[in-house]
Length: 506
Figure 1 (tube, rainbow, N blue to C red):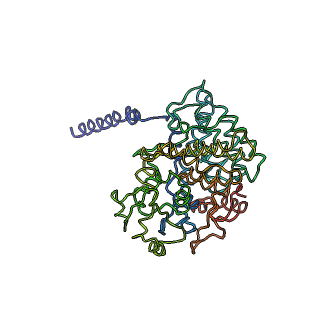
Figure 2 (figure 1 turned 90 degrees about the vertical axis):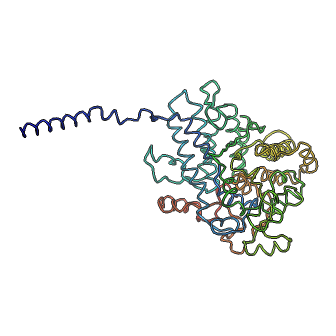
Figure 3 (figure 1 turned 135 degrees about the horizontal axis):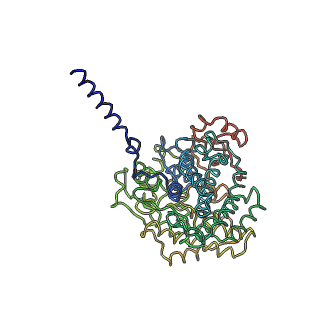
């Protein structure tokens, strides 16, 4: 009897195991999980991440003397002309990990699908923008092999020369912009222009104009050809067509987030920037600046002390740390350095503020310079005035309380007319203002044009040999992991320091 019972139990056990195994694979498939992602959403991920990280405040905006901090440690950067690779790497990591990788995926997924040709070309334009920022910031960077770690198993990409990168960027922008077709599938889910082909074309051509103007010193003949091609294609002329990344509490503005949290009381409008706006009676100062009058500490920077009157704004000078700045504070009769003017965190520097990439203002000012050089038709003064006006009108997009009244714009243009003898300086100084909060573009155009005329940061502990930082340094992670290719780039380009110039910076 015992043997019979054992046999029955064993049989039931085996049957049970067989029953549990039946349909096992099917039961363990998540029928609600996505098995594929529409490449439009991959492009959107790239576009959202094109918005700049907080590090541009520490370096690019500091180099062009728009903002400054007297504090060291994690905030060491352009304020002291020193190399801090925790900060110089931020754009590199954000762009390669989130922009280049995602645009490469979109291109791979759509290149053989004629129905998604617009999406393909939108991704090409976005990728060209990202590589222009990377090359302008670092010089030689991975380009042809970038973003191919998964598809081609290239995990240690070679670095291409900036000249070769620009040649291909110009080709990509020219081809991709021309190939956009309103009769093909409209990618309405895209977060930049909702698939509006006409606006994408203007964006692509405006980037092409920017790329052409970058070559103004290194290759004027090619610069002229590229500029003329961009103008013929049609560029951004109104703020309605601006390329800007919108932010919300889930997808925040990187600099805005930093300036509203840990570093709220640590960054100030730089004296050269604030003083220029004051000297020219620029109504944008009221839109940009706030001063917490009487504040003796960060916690005392409260709404009750906030003053946006241009007459009371005081920019922080360069050349000081949080100890030596006390002498300046005493001379000015301030309670502390917390009384210097800041970009207003409740308006332009909100963490939900938009990030402007390519604008009507920048584009009109580049056209003004191109016309001044004889590279395009049109009246230089008209382009100049249109560019200044467009930026002043653009400020309302940050916040209704940052809007500049039309009468104030008219008065400013009347009092600050373009003068032929100083046209290039005036145009590019206005470009500096129009690129406020777009650190990479302000930094690039400052190096290209030589304007505005800034006095070098006199901080005594600087780590540069020249007057200004000319590029940012490669990430330590690249030096550690991709060392052979980094060394090859350095042997070609020059030392991996803040003094080495990029290709077009002559």
